[in-house]
Image 1 (tube, protein in one colour):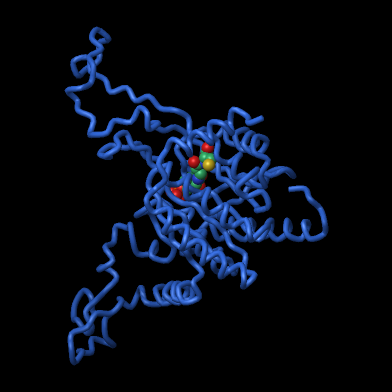
Image 2 (cartoon, protein in one colour; image 1 turned 180 degrees about the vertical axis):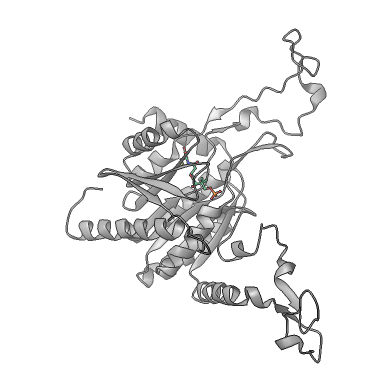
Length: 350
Ligand code: 9Z3
């Protein structure tokens, strides 16, 4: 008999419309996964960025989830460098692998460029102020080395078709696409890795209660007498819980894959218990816990064997910051390789 969970998940997918992009994304994913399956390359599905919850069908207002997409975009680069093909399921317009180095910063991308041979502030274009025969644009000298290294990695990923970018916006489009991808990746067996760094809404407005048009302040009923400002008018948003998709993912959509989820908390005293609770509830492989305020400096790995903190080293003068993803990703890959090894030797435990 179906459990309450299963019923609510089935109901969710039956009553919410799939994103219009689903057929196109399915076709793209299908050929990407086939390509890497035939090359026996491991594939990671990496989710990144925050999901939205629309308040109106023709959406003007929505609730957002915090995430710039740094964790996801940065991790994708490290997975690529370790020989994984990456399906990058990301919030539209959040950070992307490679371009993240030059987008979303206080610098406009034009600040990285200079006119060839220009004298003055940007006098880095040509060699020693040499004048170009025809006007040209070049990368400023101080950015050139790093940009060349990023460019080479980007080109390799592109030429070898190692990175598939699939965008989402709402929590519903995220869940439909995740489900589709998980089912497509079943052919990869335990070579498939799920690295769920997206910040996913826990609550949403079901279609039955969703306003079609922009909510008008004039239509909001008055709740006089409670002493609030605004003439007693309040917009009360009534949200339903999003079904626990992780359970479905682990048990049905991707039963053989390695699954790594992230847990985000703000209260340090809750982090470890929430990670353990998630592991107990869903029985997947690894929960990576992080606090909003320290997420770029430390994370904690929680699995059945125990816990392990991963921290970036203290910086001495002049030292460059270490991206914590350069420590997280190799550690996750080690665990994936150990799991493959165990499963090859007939051990069926997660
Ligand atoms: C994370 O915890 C990510 O590490 C961050 C990354 C969102 C903090 P940024 O993109 O931030 O680098 O700015 N992701 C998971 C968040 C989440 O919603 N987890 C769910 C939960 O905590 C489980 S799927 O309940």
